[in-house]
Length: 494
Figure (cartoon, rainbow, N blue to C red):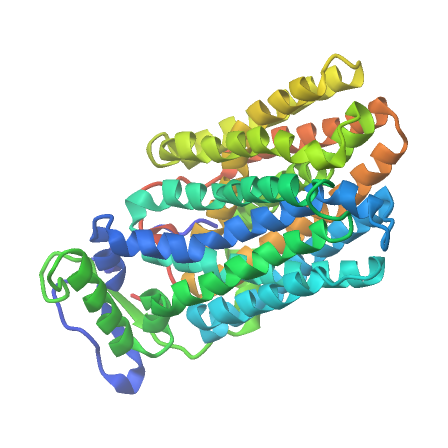
């Protein structure tokens, strides 16, 4: 069921916090945050939190670009199946990490999780560089994925809750698209570190994984000044701290505090320490059942589409086109450019033409183009360069589509369950589409049959087109609306 904003959101002027005995808070925090113009504060939040996607892009690209080196490593000698298993382990870790850390994010707050999840990622990606066999490599990739999965929940929910409504769509898409900045970094790193004339075959891939750990240390420092989400604080019994944070933000952005001014919509909430798991389940799968179906379909389709193709990108180039492992990075760079330009150039349309229109368009076009390019691949009509150009065009549309899936599940559920909603749909979608995809495509590539690989591409295309139809019929028109209008908080009081 889709809840509409209540007239009670526009409660008259001003009293701040009602009687503490009944734990009711009346606040204008959501409308004050949405009224702010874009500022240096928002840019810093995006940089400090959005870099998570750069790290994920770096990790995923390294996993693909280093596949040839891992197969040739004197100490590892991985097979295509080994690589598929390790990549699936990374995604399985991301699934479980998202669920566990997502639950904690809604329970103990967004800010604490920033540091916990980043510490897990840092430790595990550094340990990956020390892997000695497939079991250790898969374990460390699993733990790295757990850190990244946890980052998704804390970061997506915080960005949604701090960025003004009229910028939310484009900002979210560009941040998710920054994954491909990390992908480009990973590609360049692979080009340099896998050059046999510069670095030995069993050292280059180990140094590549240390890049992520080094960047993560810098990110730890960048996050020190980011505040807890005022929206989370006002529900969880800390309204004074929430108002103080918003006052400070307004001082830095507009040079004055707006809390005492008339005209801001106010909302009354009953504060709570936590949300019982029974209420979470009821909210996600009963009260918001239709939105849950949409989120599941979008996440599953894009996860299979992306992970199946991208995790096996290097294998297709090496096994079918004869590209050497140390040259794969050159092909990833244009691919990454298409993926970043898509959200950058099309993202504004999600806030103007609207969510439903653009989700349907980007998912549908991506599926059709993949089916066409898959057929051309199956008949041998594409060179390595032609294949790369085809993927570049396809993912110009698929990248904003995938980012829109995260946007949808992070803005269409109530604040109390937002992080866990992101985690659940990321986990289920990735479990269905992402964990299966790399292993399946690894097996298909091992057959040496272009027709078998084409069948996998067709499956990805069908899933994307089906998701486009579901989005057009059932997605929520959330553009330029306050989060509290899209999904009323569970703590809302009439």
